[in-house]
Amino acid sequence: VKGSNRSNRNASICKMSEVSPTSHRVNLGPLEVSPLGVGAWSWGDNFYWGKGDENDQKQAFDASLESGINFFDTAEVYAIGESERRCGRFKRSYLRRKEIGEEGMVLATKFAPLIPFRFSADSVVEACKRSAERMGEDSIDLYQLHWPGLGLDERYWDGIAKCYEQGLIKAVGVSNYGPKRLLVVHKRMKERGVPLVSNQILYNLAYRTPEEELAELCKSLDVKILAYSPLAQGLLTGKYSEDSLPSGPRKRSIKSMLANGSELLVVLREVAENRDRTMAQVALNWVMCKGIIPIPGAK
Image 1 (tube, rainbow, N blue to C red):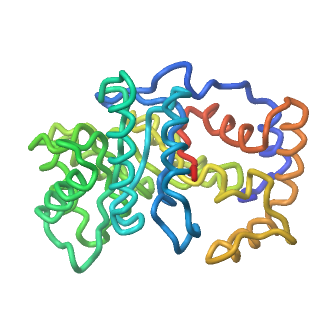
Image 2 (image 1 turned 90 degrees about the vertical axis):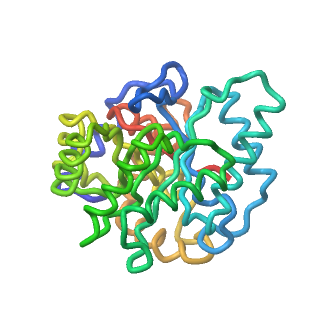
């Protein structure tokens, strides 16, 4: 567990109240999303997450909507665009079968600053158009810069602002931005009249570094935090142990997290049992209690 005082940090799990993931909506600029989203990193990916069944993923998409969850997050690099295509297919299929307006669903995706292949503002605009085409959308609900662009940040910021100004996207977000860079991009967007609505970062019970500075900064700037990997890639579900590890690239990282998070898992399991909830429900509820939107994966 990352942090200097594990006992105090673990105690916070026991003090939280229960938040409904579907009882209200959260504003992301012009968008209204559920306080819990769904991450689509694994949809179409057969390498990192292992082979998944598209029909199972479609059922997860449908079940989320039926439960009141309307927010789905993908990226152009997830399965080299296949995740975006599946999100679009699942959405169209659902709309054909159900009486729900398109405004009832929110699809977010991300631009990948693949230096040196993308080095201009126009590269962001072109990538945005291709993402929209893959998803079958006229415009993208939330478009995010997937990670900092190092020396090309200013160009990428200009590019995503152009996307907003041209009506290609409804809202602008960033991902994996620390405090210093977030302050600068927020200022640049404000100067252009472009609201910066979100920062998607790694945050969960086992990784709480953002609490040290970034969380308060986001709050002061009215930038909503979206938490990816809120279950620590499955660790916080309790399904992994030294004798039961995932196959593939995740095996090493889960093994390392198990070694460092055993105390946390004991407390998490105890709270879940006392409240008749699963460990995953407790871990996700803890994130929502912080006013942060978790986006766990679903296969």
